[in-house]
Image 1 (cartoon, one colour):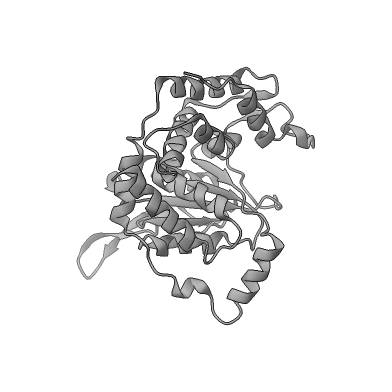
Image 2: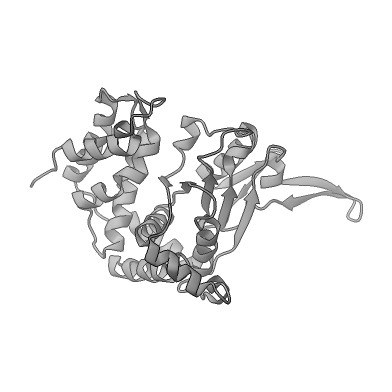
Length: 315
């Protein structure tokens, strides 16, 4: 698949999801970027902004299966991965697959379950496989997790540790829609949800082919050094207590490749890196003012400052 084909596919998905989620074209493009990069999304946002609807619209757009897991304090790892149970009818143990065996997972309020259960999902995300009672089961491609958490409630929650948050490819916020977009929501949802009539614009096989093609987008030696310089600057900044991990550096390159492909190019540019740096890196650092209310030192602003100050490579 050529970059121009990836662009057409990406634009079709973005436009299709945009028929259901209004005024969030950039956020949808970020999500498609993560999908084509083989990563996963953490949506840290308030209730009612369309997180679940977005995931369902994405699944319909690529003709994929989608399942939702409501995370609660009493949820067990086996409730996600599945369990071996003794079947009297068959007189043997039978494996009952959990909801993780699908294409798109909506992990709703992931911070409401225990770390043990969170880890079961994160293992599947990292390895694209699930191990149950010593036996390993491969997960079907594409496998894409959209996890959500509510930032305004802390009672009864188990926040993801920084090491686990780092496993998410991007951390995004949908936020409130613009007034015009919110008015469009009222018009479109007055009689019936547009999600019900949404049709696929591509197949799962198209997404797999596009994901493989994204890996072939050229990243020059200068570009790779530029990406490493950005990651290194997060580790030496006096505003950052813990900088970006090598996993984050690789994620930044993958995201830049996907962003370039969605623009129809066979090579990545510094502008691609700048476009994806904040959602890819901001959740991977711990700032020195993590527990203060200094908004100027938010993780997002720190990454923006670093990206603005790191010299852009010139041939």
